[in-house]
Length: 142
Image (cartoon, rainbow, N blue to C red):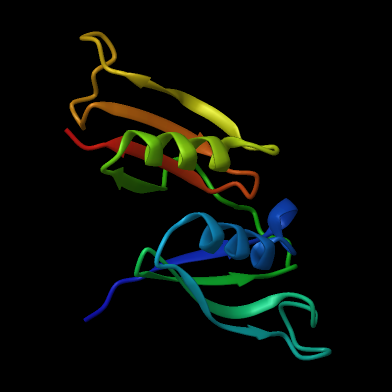
């Protein structure tokens, strides 16, 4: 059995999947776009510029992606996020800055723990949403 994270870009995010995975694979080490299949002309669910099915890796972990121009009553939510365990101070700052820039938003500022606000995860923690609507939790391991 294998379980994978599947990201579906719909609504305002539809048409941004390829840009998003190019961005993600550029900022995480050991990452690559493995395959992209686009919709055929006239195919239900999308148009030829949209990703019907794609596979990419972030630091060796595989993700699946699709986008649809159908009207869906849902999109990405911070209730489901990608949790990144960082081992270096510079690494967590660089990733947090890049993910929250250019239209992203900070939901929990990246900060050192000093008693109050210590979530118990590690030495430093932050939570942000990237410009594509994906939510990221970044943690500096203790």
